Image (tube, rainbow, N blue to C red; front, side):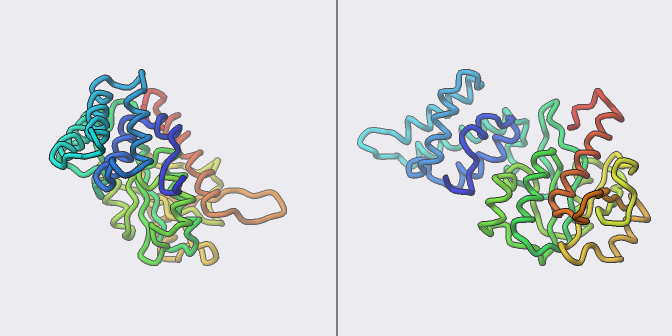
Length: 279
């Protein structure tokens, strides 16, 4: 299967919000009459007995138009069926019908129980497309608000980036920018101060780190780490967190280190308010 696409099993398991954010760009970009992948996804949604009845009906209408007599697809009918399905996906996910599915800088409204973690990842500079994609995959797995990459980071459409991200880039905000961009992405959904946390060696061990209620976490370059400017800014607000290592190797892949930090941070948020839907 094309590395840009999630497996059908993964699509079936997506929440309504994640399904809308993943599927709407596909419907808008690809012709369901010629895209084998999109046809299979639509058939899965149409035939899923656990799916919402109205969504199944609108998916079925689009499939009926696509598989019209003699293979002829009437353009206006296809356009109307596409628009109706997109509208239903947005409605089921609680999205503003006038906002694009991948709107940058303002996260969509989420159904109850699906509020993303109030965390944004900021990566000023890394060199590996694989690491970039791996960071996005971890962010999507933990339900992070978004990821902001600096201008010198790998391209989002690099094959290794897409392969490592495994579709995660379609499920959350992934944009270019600096610290202020990361702060803006967070504050668009979580108003208030945004603490800056630096993930770097020499900081407070993760199990003793006082994670803030919301914040931006900065990740460093694979060899150079974070600049002193970023570390100073973090010390002044959120602090520097480190992953203790006790084995022969004295370093971790940046994506692996991020996953460890996010695990502790998400646990801290849940423990602070066990009734919260966060996490």
